[in-house]
Length: 174
Length: 121
Image (cartoon, rainbow over all chains, first blue to last red; front, side):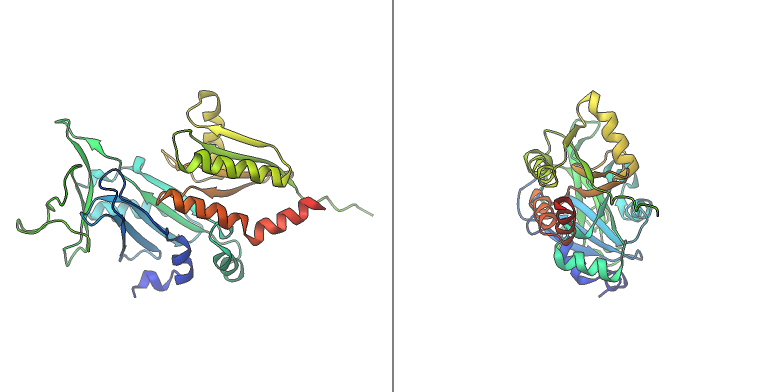
């Protein structure tokens, strides 16, 4: 358990989790949500397929501030190139008790009246590079430090090579 | 003796949406219309692809919703008779099924039960 998960109750983590999500515009396989560690007080989830294609990255925390600036700074540290993290692709969302199921609604009303869950979504839609090749966001987690690297690769790639891995390694989200 | 002001009542339900968005149409449009009907208030759809409605949608999202340069849709708002605008729901980017679950949870919520009780009085 990390510092950030201690500060975000499991009940709320369960309430936010989707029951089923599939790879977006890549392979349609079921997504494997993966938690990330960070110094921020909330929870991260990277929704990527087994080949590493990222559908969306989410961050949620219990607060009344928009965490988007902190989320952007964090993502830029782990993205090659950092310019892939554009303000246009970061979208904020609040989550209120009534839309999260009765246990979460009652928990929020009891323990934190007026509290909100604030979040940021990072979704990079497939885009064309200067040569006209469609690219998309991938993630590699085969690193000790940092634990994840986001990078772009041709959209049709099955398991593209991570720019920070040694040549023999391949991108994979485990 | 001064009269106590009447408690605020729901006045209008607005859904900011786009026709191409599967979280919006038909899912949130259908639920939004139903919610407005249950609360006995008018329903308003603001289509971000309609030049005439986009400005009102942008303003509502900026002042009361979840703003961003390319903000998430749908966003659902409940306007009250005292002028308060309540943000009810923003679509879940993770999956359409998750947005569907959010609507189901909203329908079963303690909050909605309380509002319906007030409306029936």
